[in-house]
Image (cartoon, rainbow, N blue to C red; front, side, top):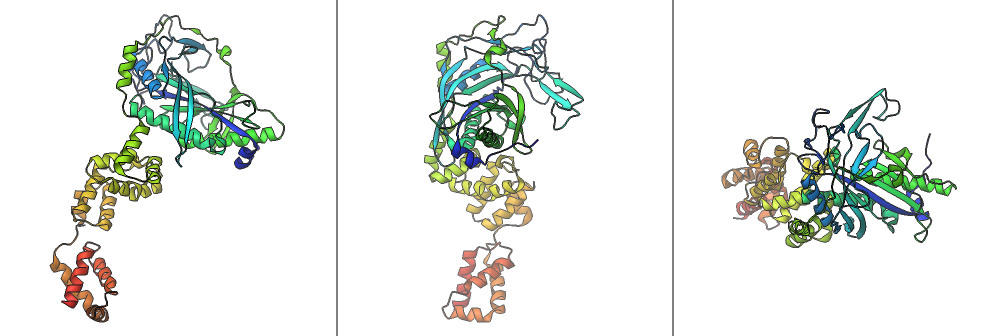
Length: 499
């Protein structure tokens, strides 16, 4: 059945969208949240388990200290207060990938609360997102539905469950409602999740690889007639795992809800599934309220009471966070504001910094990563960091240009060789014979041949008209396959004709 949609621009002109985002990040600890099972990725199904992560009778949990430290790091980076005492609770619900029939989480006593995150959009506008809480919990296992369509339960002949992921440490970050975003709601949502991902990586608490599910976003959205009206009924689109998908999910829900409300209907408070194939969402289940989960304190775990000295030690050891780092690098490199935003939006900041550290100038590093390499990545539909070239190799390439051994045209050919797996720039230049011809003898030979073939041009140059000299230089460059120094060719032509 087709879904009625209102054009997005019409929808945001008629209604005020309000966002709320819950982001789950898998922590990069060696073991799980409450037991010693390894917390790896890609192992054979149901091999990274213990009686605790399988929920077997009599198995008792114990808290992973490193996971608590990582949660405190995240809370501090998000300007949160860190609880002097907090505790775990049992969130009761039945689903096959939760072997205990409850999830150990935090409910009314989170480890971090009352924070904020300033999110910079592509044009430089900054949106402050209020953080309600960041709490610790464990991940569920993974269901695989076989025989249906698109991996969904509907129509499947049977389901398989893998408990390797059950018990992986998570931190869930919950925002307060994000108002006053208007037509920028999709962009704000994606930028917020991207900013969090960058923070997780800077803190070294997670690989934060969205394609692996290390970071997942639940996107809440509601519409109201105006910013002064009460909040509308929200939907929650679950487990969205890419920035583009977050943006698409918000756009779709805005258009879908607007069409329903404009027709006099009402929004159902429910979870929804996002479909990568067309950017749509579909109903999941009616959204449960807290009381439906029958939360009660976890009797097998004592409260967590982080010593204030420990919290301050963690705060003092926090690395430079992405926003501060960008400001520092911006000052050091001297890029314009639009140039720096382009670098950040392209995911090139780390690559350029590493290239500069390897010896290239900031301008040269930016030229390669935002020019030839960005075009290559776009043509291949991959991220810049996925290209088969390292920052050190880019710096080597530029060093060859700076030394005069190759020019920019030859450097692009050398770059092609590096990307094709032919070795470092030095090896490619040698193997392909790309070095600039610096010996005047071979150049003079080619110049003489060129002038002899174009006596009229030679005569014009001899009479002082240097306009046609470009044709001679072009012919020489073509004859030498671009390996001549154009400036030196010009000097030699003038000397040959006028000297």
